[in-house]
Amino acid sequence: MKYVSLKNRLLLGSFVVCSIITLSISLYQISRLQQREFDFLQNEISAFQQSVMPSIDEALWNYDWAMVKTIASSQTNQVLTYLNICGLEDGFCCSSGIVEKKPFREYRQDIYYQFSPSAQSQKIGTAYLQLHYQPFGQLFKRYIFSEFLVNGLGVFGVAICIFLLFHLGAIRRLIRIANYTRDIDLTAVEKLQPLITTNRGSTMDEVDLLAEAMDGFIGRIKQEFSRRKQLEQQLNHAQKMEALGTLAGGIAHDFNNILAAILGYVQLCYNSAEVGSTTRRRLEQVLLAGDRATALIAQILIFSRKSEKYTQEICLTEIVNEALNLVHASLPGNVTIETDLDNELWMVGDSGQLHQVLLNLATNAGYELAEHGGKIKVSLVSLRLTQQQADKLDLDIGDYICLTFCDNGSGVPKEIRDRIFDPFFTTKETGKGTGMGLAVAHGIVQAHGGRIILEPDVEKGTCFGLYFPQGQAAKKREGSSPDAERAFHVGHEHLLLVDDEPIVIKMGQELLQSLGYHVSTSTSSIAALRQLLETDNIDLLVTDLTMPEMTGIELASKLRQEKPSIPIVLYTGNVDLLDSSVLQDGVIDQLLKKPFKIEDLSRVVRQALDG
Image (cartoon, rainbow, N blue to C red; front, side, top):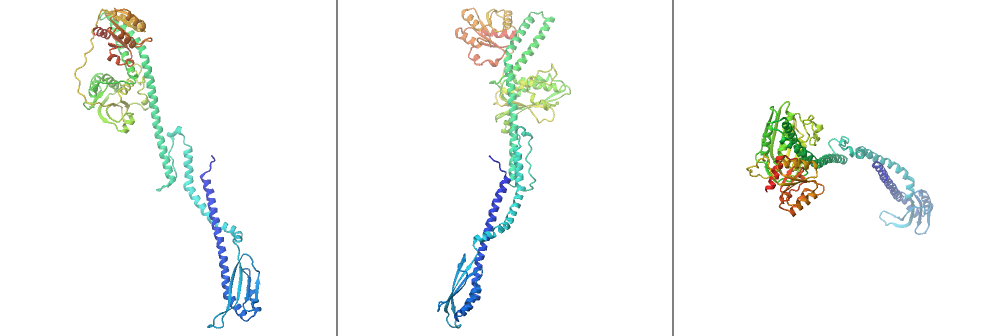
C-alpha cells in the first residue's frame, strides 16, 4: 500500500478546496458584473426617457422628421445600438444604429403629447430600442484570470496561515508520535522512555490526549512485560526445581542401597566389637556419619516431592514452641530469641516436616549471628489475604497462618536473592553447609499448599515469610506414640529376602541371621514368587519395592492372592513411589524405610511375624 503523509494530504486537500473556493468567488464576482451590465441598461433607458423622449415628442408632434432623425442618430452608441421612431398618423418611421446586435435587450414605448396641463394626452407614435450588453462568457474570458488571481491571493494566504498553525500545533507532534511508535523495540521495552510532547501549558488538545494515551499504553506494556518476565523466571525456577527433584528421586534408590549396605555391615561390626574398645568407638562415629547421610537423603526426598496429602490436624503454635525450645540450646549464648505467637492456630500437615523447616531456618540464622550476636524474632499471626496479596504470592484468597522468621544479621545480598532456595547453593565455607536447608524448607512449605518468600523490604537482617492455609481449631490430642524399642527382637523363623542388589541381599541376610532367623535370598522377584508358591516352609517375605522384573507390590499382591497367610514386609528408599492404599488394603503388613538400622529391622520383622 502506497504511503502518503498527512502533511501532503493536507496540502493537496487545501489546494483543491482553496481552488474551488477561489473559482466560486470569481464566478460570483463575474456574475455580479453581468448584473451590473443589466443595471446599466436600465439606467440607459431611464436616461433616454427623461432627457430624450421630450424632444422626440415635440419633434414628432410638429412632424419635424429631420429633427427626429437627428435625435435618433445622436443617441445610438455601444450600448443603445438601435433606435426606431414611428409616427402614428402618417406611418413614417425613422431609425438609426445597427439592428439586432447580439446579445441585446428590447424596449418599446408609446409616444404621447399633452396639449395643456389640463388636457388628456394623445398618442402620436412609438419608440423601439435595442440595447446591447456583454454576455457571461465574454465577461468570464475577460475577467476570470484577474479575478482568480486576486481572490486566490486572499484565499490561499488564509489557508497557508491556517496550515502553518495546524502544522506547528498538530502535525509535527503527530509525526513525533508516529516516529516514537515506529521505533519501539519490544526486546528492550524496560528502557523505553515516556513519550514527551511539546510543553502544552495548562490546556490539552486531541494530540495531547493521544500522547497521554500512548504513554499509558506503554506503561501497561511495561507492566505486562515485567509480569511475564517474573512468570518466566518463576517457570524456569519451577522447572529447574522439578528437574532436580526428579533427579533426586531417581538416585535415591541406588544411593539408599549403597548406604544401607554400608550401614548394615558397620552395624554388624559394631555389634561384634568389644564394648569400650577403640574399634567400637570408631564404628560408632561411622554410624553417626551414616545417620547424617540418612538425614540428608531424607531432606533431598522431601525436596523432590511434587505433592503430598496430609490429614493430621496440628497446632502450629505448639510446633513453633517445640522447635524453638529445641534450637535454643544449640544457639550461641549471644543470640536471643523473641516470639510473638497467636495461640491455637491450626493447620493440616506433618509436624515432623514443619519442625525440619524451623530447624533449618534457625540453623541458618544462628550461623549468621554467631560471630557478633543478635536477635531472632519469630511471629505467628492469622490473616486473610486480599486479591492483590494472593496474586503476589500465587495463592488463593482465604485465611492463612503467617509465620515470620527474622534475624538482625547482615542480610542476604541482592545478587544471590534469587538463588537462596536452589538446592546445594550455600554461602558457607566448605564443610559447614550442604546447601539443602532452604531448598528443603521451600519444598515442605510448597507441599503444604503454602509459600515461603524472602521479604524484600527489610532495613537490616533477613526476614522470611511463611504462609500456610489455616485449618479449623481442633481439640489438642493427648498422648503420643511410644518411642521405638531400642532392644533387638530376635526369632528363629524362616524368612525369604528379595532384592535385585546383591550387596543389599548379602547385608540383609547377615543382619537377619544375626537376629537368629533362617534366611533364604533371591535377586529375582519372579523366582522368589515361584519359590513361595512351591514351598510351605517360609514364614515371612521381606522384599524391596523397586525391582526390574516385578515390583515388590506386584510380588506381594500375587502372593496375597495365593497364600494370604504369609506376612509381608516391604522396604524402600523412596516412600513417594508407594501407593498408600497398599497398607490400607492389607497388601503388605509392615513398611520399612531404607537405609534402616538393625533395631528397626528387628522390630518390623517381629511385628509382622506376630501379627
